Structures are given as structure tokens and as C-alpha cells.
Length: 374
Image 1 (cartoon, rainbow, N blue to C red):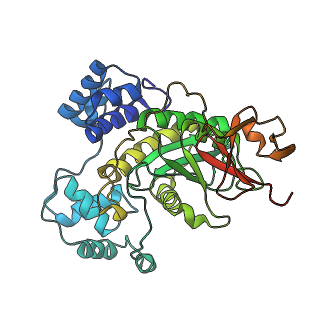
Image 2 (image 1 turned 90 degrees about the vertical axis):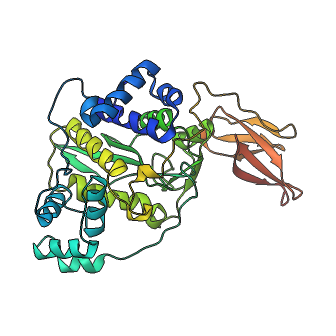
Image 3 (image 1 turned 90 degrees about the horizontal axis):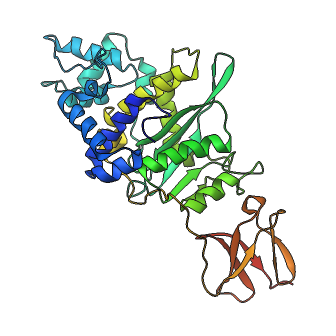
């Protein structure tokens, strides 16, 4: 994907960051479909001039509070102005990462913000520590969802978000005009090419990754299984299962969208790209030890396949092709496995219990066939 779809600046920035994370130039260049010569050019420009070096032509540099003013309180207020949703702990950690020294403790920074009317007392009472389960390694699980839509001119905009469970690294943040399968597949393909494949993806029970009845297989979820990504559906009516992505949506609303009116989708995506860079590489995250998500993220060792291999099953499996009705014939009867599997071969495998069989698609068991009651 040689600098297309998202903004050129954002892609080049993500490229150099991924090279720094992975230390494998050839692999990252391959995923971004650029030559090593081009890759080294942008890496050297970034190392020499920072983000400004990634521009084709000069422009105003990104704002940075590295120049510390004499009045420490003024420095804190300027940082708060730049990130109006951040509290004392985030501001202190972020200012330190920008080179500021001699900063007061977070509680003092919070008091300064409160004294200037920048923190309401009721908001302070809402804040408190909260522990969530997380997967042990990057790319063990990605969480995916659509944030509630908002209007761009007269059309709805549906932000598609994909978040790495372990690091909270934002994999995908796209302003979509619809929630259709092909739209999601396009953006996931770009993400897989750049970051590799996760072991599994956690999704809710709505479309396009689940059927209208909830939790059933769709063409999108079958495609994910086909490329080697397991699909896990959250519990019905339990949005907290996708809690990390839901919390990301809250930060997106508060820090990126609040107070902004957009007339085009390009305007939305440009703002998304800039905020995502800050979120991934600068913004301290409390669940990541007050470090940015990129400090814990590594690209996946499982590359997105250029061509899918043939589907193979174990020697003892009975292979059946799924009909247009979403059925297979086994032991003289038709058994439903889902229309999303139409045309694919599935493997019927005996279980440890006599008369009970398991139906597999690739490496995933998708249903059971019980002959014991026949």
C-alpha cells in the first residue's frame, strides 16, 4: 500500500515508528509495499528532522512544548490547553516525555488545573483505579467495533476502530460512510498488511461480523477464519466485554471529536490520523504504566498471506461441501452450518463421544452433529 488510503504523513509516521518498534526494515517495507531505499530515506529524514522531515514540502511544524517557559504553571496550563481531556498524571508524564524538568507531582498539577477552573469537582470524584483483564502479548487479541455515528454534512459517519488488547495500540481508526462488509474488509486488509495477523478478533453480536439474529457466522467472519484469524463474539447485552474499545471510543469523543463540526469525510479522517498518532506514540496511558501504547506494541510475526493456501483437513475427517442453502449432507440427513460457508469444504470429525461429531471450517469448530438421538 505505497502511501494511499490514509494520509501520506500518517502512513510515513506509522512506517518509521514500526521500524523503530520491530527493528526489521525489510519486513516493514514489505508490508507497506515500498523499497528498502525508500524506507531508509524516510527513516533518516525522521531521525534528522522529526515529523517535519516526513513532509514533501515545508509546513508549520507540529506543536511541541519542549521549550519550557519560566513560569512552570503557565507550561502546565499550555499543556492542558493542548490536551483539554487529560488530568494531572497524563500531563506530567507527557511533559516529561517532551523534555520538561522539575515538574510538580500529579496532585499539584491537578490542583493547578482546578484552581484555574479547568477541572470540575464532580469530574474528580468520577476518577479512580480500575483493573481489566488483558491478553499477555501484542496481537493475541484485537478488539473491533463501530463507534456510534455522527453527522458529516447530511451523511452519517461510522468510525471503525480496532484496538490491540494487550498494548491498547490503535490499529485502525477510519471514518466510514457505511458499516458494510466490503468496507470493513478493505480496512482490515490494510491493517493486516501493515501490522500482520492477530490470533483472534473480539467483536460484538451485530453486523457485519454477526448475523441479525446475533452471533451467527457472516461472510466477513468466515473470511477472517479463512485468513487464519479466530473470531470471538462478546456476550449478548454485555458491552463491557469490549470494554477497552468502548473506553477508546470515549477518549475519541472527548479528545478528538468534541466541539468539532466537519463538512467532509476527508476532514474527519485527517483529524483521526493526527489524533491516532498522538494516542499511539505520545499520550500516556494509565493501563500501560503511564507510557504510550506504542511502548508495548510489536507487529505480528504472522504476515498476511499474499495468496490463501488450500483448505486441508485431517485424514480421518469426512469432507463435505456446503450447499447454497448453507447445509451439508451427513449420514443421509441435511445439517445446517450457515449460508456464509456456501461453496467451502468443511470437515466432519468424530469426537471422543460415540455418535457425536464436530464440524470444522479450517481450524475452527463451527457446530456439532449429534447422531445419538436418531
